[in-house]
Length: 155
Image (cartoon, rainbow, N blue to C red; front, side):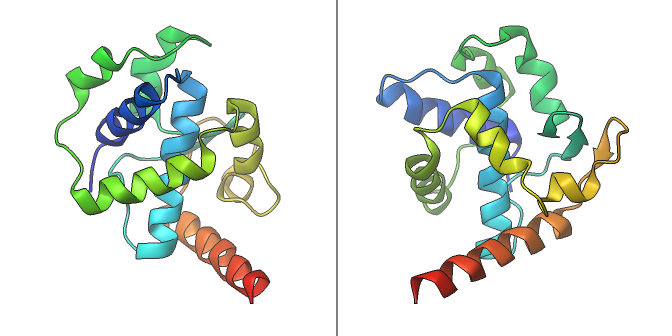
């Protein structure tokens, strides 16, 4: 498992390779969605950070606290480098790359809308209060269901 900063570092490197810049909101949503798919597909967390339901969606507080200073501007990868602790394995890098390719062209607002869908972990946890924990088990169950639905639709 990694910190959200480790995964963010990889995402920002992929974005840089393609000449893209990533806002804080988009970065948080990408890390959260990749974490969800990792739980759903592999059954294990991608990140060790806690995830919370806030008014505007799921948030990784540790990551948010560091990158919120960028507002709607691009996150500076140099700041993430300060907090990143270890590089992703080649297997986990490939996993992140595959989901980067799926979601990279979506805006922060579009990614946010995905995390707010009816039945999503955020919608299950959020009750109007701030900082409600979203358990990994809830996230895993949701992404397993998405995976099963996708497999049924493909057959």
